[in-house]
Image (cartoon, rainbow over all chains, first blue to last red; front, side, top):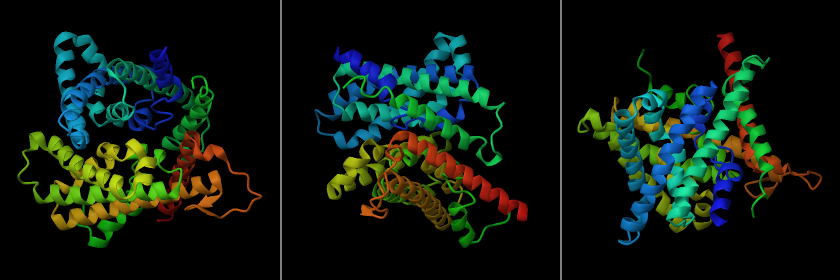
Amino acid sequence: MELLAIFISAILINNFVLHYFLGICPFLGVSKKIDSAISMGLAVTFVMAITAVVSWVINHWILIPYGLDYLQIVSFILVIASLVQLVEMFIRKISPPLYQALGIYLPLITTNCAIMGLALLAALKNYNFLETVIFGVGSGIGFTLAIVLMAGIREQLDLADVPEPLKGAGISLIVAGIMALAFLGFSGMIK
Amino acid sequence: MPVKTRGEEFAKGLWKENPIFRQLLGMCPTLAVTNAVINGLAMGLATTFVLVLSSLVVSSIKKLIPSQVRIASYIVIIATFVTVADRFLAAFFPPISKNLGPYVPLIVVNCIILGRQEAFSSKNTVGRSLIDALGMSSGFVIALLVLSSIREILGSGTLLGYQVLGTWFEPWIIMMLPPGAFIALGVLIGLANKVEQKSSSRR
């Protein structure tokens, strides 16, 4: 029950993009077309799930036992950077079609604050191993949901009559605001 | 491209290449911590500290860093200063550190900082990199202050904790919540584009 609550809340209530403001750069940058948004979402979900596992292991087996928690920031960022490299090489070997589909989105993920945010938030909330994994997968799905919805709206937006200065980032942020407003409706679902 | 004077190097960060309004970098902390001016200011200063010191270090050891591992080296340098800033805030300003939560450690993935190292400090002298870092971070601080003032005034009728709007004012709770951040920044970017269009058509 507890796990289900974490999962649902990571997708809908504490959505990474619309509540924590993490991963705004890809959210604005890669949401022009639905298919690229789906690829980006998949890539992020995949890396998030692995990051959740690895960062938990590092935090609880190395950093905390030896009293090194002040090294959290440095070690998490290094782990994420090398992890993305590894995942990229691994996917290229194992499944070339998937590699093709994810394309340039994989390396971009290193600088995605959502991944770092996931590692830090999971450490901050003191989740146990299973909770961390569920939190990682849920957050990834939440990110995918937000970016795909956004892409759907933006495809329509191309045809709309938007004032010149608001074109691009301006109107996207306002649309994101209205989406965040809609997602606020989910809060209170789980307390 | 003609060589810029020191003044121009500094001033470009304030408006022409303002990281938030013109380059759209570092959006995550911008949206997340601007619900009150004090939080915006703390985030701005912490980012300034990290950006200036990282630029200083990167520009002075740029010849020693092999180009294959430069990004990783920049990240380690940045992460070191972020750790310092995080510990400092936690030790001396616990309430602010608590308000900012995970967003202080997240300075490490702020694209502005890595972007300036890659685009500027790795190619320029120490002096110019310092000026560039100071200009960029001033632009960042100004943008955070503008956004957080708007959100604090409309969202709670106060500025830096002091009541500025009378009791007649019904606070717009929405401005304190995530949607308010997105909408306010969207409108501000629209305004910045409008001003830029006006001034470039006059030229």
